[in-house]
Image 1 (cartoon, rainbow, N blue to C red):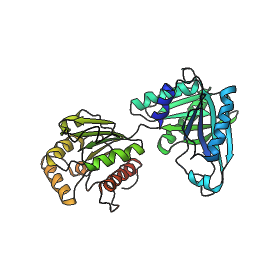
Image 2 (cartoon, rainbow, N blue to C red):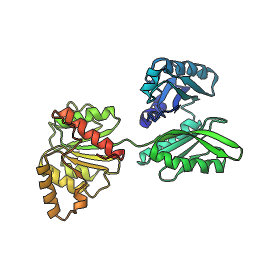
Image 3 (cartoon, rainbow, N blue to C red):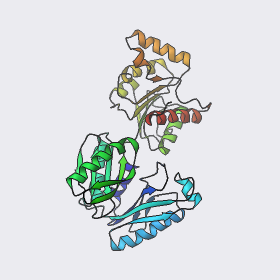
Image 4 (spheres, one colour):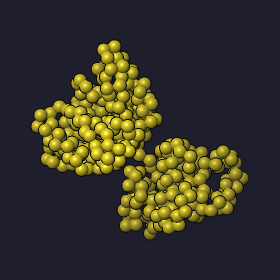
Length: 350
């Protein structure tokens, strides 16, 4: 989502844009805090703070006024039961939406400069948090997981307090917080941005085709790798981010495998799998999975163990791949694989 809005701001061509951000939802444990909508002066819309309906209609109405007058507003909106359910509340409640006008071409605009810092962090495969005060002047502080700070909330002590909160937000996700200061409490929204998960898919068969389709819905990047140029084609993989044809182990060796990378082997061919596994088992890849039965997985582990790989290293290879959801078809197997990738990324037992 960060990529979508960063790119949209850059290429909007609009002189003025209003950004609406869901900053609070009373009683909600929803992961939708931070959901955004962009409203251009021309009337163009991107995204949504909820699922549409009267909430987004109120946001659009407020945005039209801000396009003309500038500034920002914090909207407090009451929800009925159906609307509340859609963002994680069990019954009706209140949500807060920060609506603010942005000048996309002005590098000094606090939102634009913050997103530039976020873009730098994401390009370096780092998560970042944007802390924005909800009262007073439009100021923001960006803190990334490398410890880099960009911007200020206007006071060194306030910045330090915000950073201590941001450290937890990097782990737990976006939220509204109060920051204690000698002059009283200040409310700030802490918006967490993380690089997308990248799927490195070895094998361009039917399961791989389903993986790229489903992954696009989950905003994951995909790289499809195969040695057969008749299989690894754009016609077969319209949703793939990249398609690379050649020796899979050589291609994988040239990819930076970080903790947000999932290596998925669905070639079902030892001559592809073993050389790739030799590359990735000792890498920093966050997930390694291989299609096959328990017996086949044991055989592969035995061969690699004979080459000197330890049991701890071999335990990283998930095979049979995916959560056991009882699926048989290619889309069902792809769903099981992605479910396991998401669970592993979220630190859940998979």
